[in-house]
Length: 199
Image 1 (cartoon, rainbow, N blue to C red):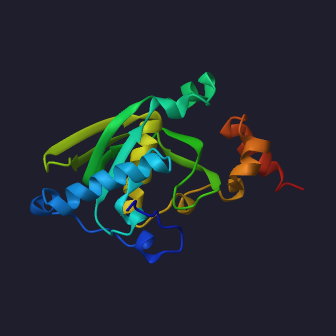
Image 2 (image 1 turned 180 degrees about the horizontal axis):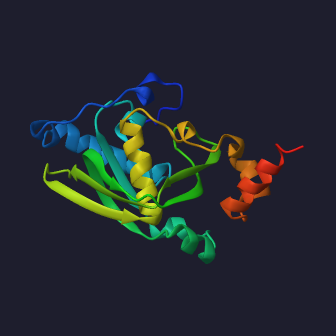
Image 3 (image 1 turned 30 degrees about the horizontal axis):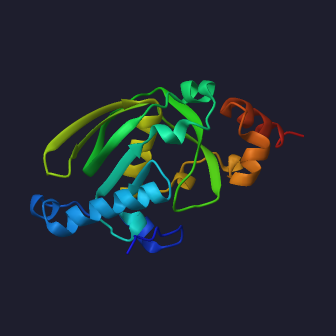
């Protein structure tokens, strides 16, 4: 039976997830969950999925940004986001050990808040240390959109959602985003929504 993705308001999304032991990582239960999460992420579709989003408060996430997700995005937008294919991989007990002072602002969504998006400022580059699905240590250096995905998923494991970090006035339904904001650079959107507060 496919996994269901829980939505905002479910308490599991606000808990700090617990770390997994080496024994747990190698267990049939966790290995099965990883496969199920990968399927759920593809089905959604999404570029990342954290265990709390499927009801498990454990420090586990899966990530994959497939080329087929890029086909409807203008090349200049892909370039601006520095978005490239990211092969499937697993994060267990991840932590951000370094992040750049340089930041970027882009619209961001979440499978646990379907139908909405908002501008979120995040570090442009990060270094993440974690374990993989075999329990081996892994160090990841990422920038651009990949760095954003990592930060988003690690936030989930700490009980945070993108709405905690968003530019409040940019919060939008996906329908209105497509109609009004989709083809504008985030800086222009922010300028326009700020002007709405003047006068």
